[in-house]
Image 1 (cartoon, rainbow, N blue to C red):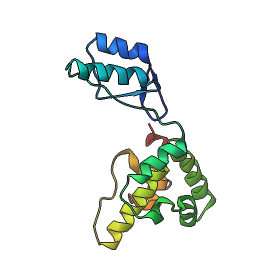
Image 2: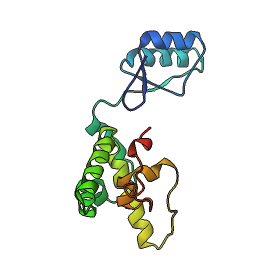
Image 3: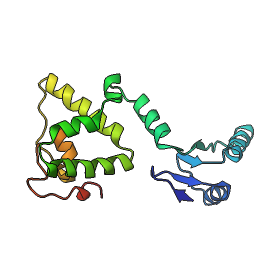
Length: 169
């Protein structure tokens, strides 16, 4: 078994056999080899065994993974392609702010979280347009300067010298 950067546990045929012998059946199996699972499922149906394994193939590229995420999110198309980095740059006034924003932006990008940030921008904009009040901020999210710039919370993590790495733990 191995774990991908998307926190999927990917199994091979031997791992599947081991799981079945231990009578452990996760809800969804992520695997590169689906032929043996399909055969197993067909035999289960044929003999009315009732033990069917659901499976999916692991995400192969960031672009494909992110495209799938964004497709399924209910937000206007303009937010799906929103120039988030340009927006964030426009919110920064000092070199320190720009540096902090860029450092965090790289972390979000490496984790494949840019679609989530765009969605958060959409949510914040929608709440503002509809005069919906939300909290000042809570937990480790207040350590993120990017979330502050988007408007998710009201805590300036630079002012309070909060380390954004606390948020990414």
